[in-house]
Image (tube, rainbow, N blue to C red; front, side, top):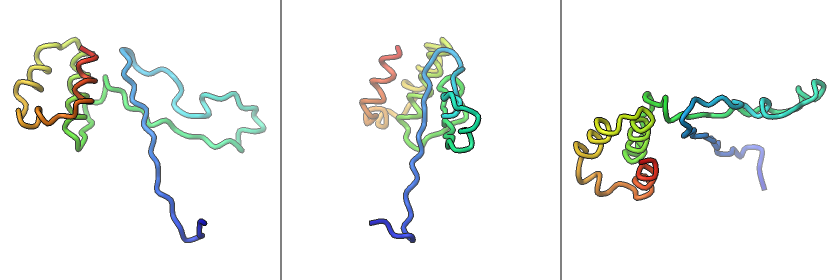
Length: 112
C-alpha cells in the first residue's frame, strides 16, 4: 500500500539516435499525437531526452566502455577510421581494454 508520505524513484528514459543524419522526428509525445484542441489541456506531454551519437562530443560517461563506444561511433560517422579508432584502441590502457564490456565492444564491431 502506498502511503501519502511515500515517494517514488524517478525513471529517466533516454532515446539514443544512431542514425547517419540528424534526428528530424518528434521531440515530445504531443508532437506524435493528433489531439483535438479541446483535449490538449488534458493530455500530459512527455519530452524526449534525445542523445544523438553524431553530436555527442560534450557527453562524458562514468563508464569508460560507454565513452569508448561513443568515441568510436562518432569517428565512424565522421569517416575517420584511422586516427580516432587507433587513438582509442592502441593508446588506451591495455588492462582497461581487456576488461571492456563485451557488449560495448560488440556494438563497435557491428558498426565497423
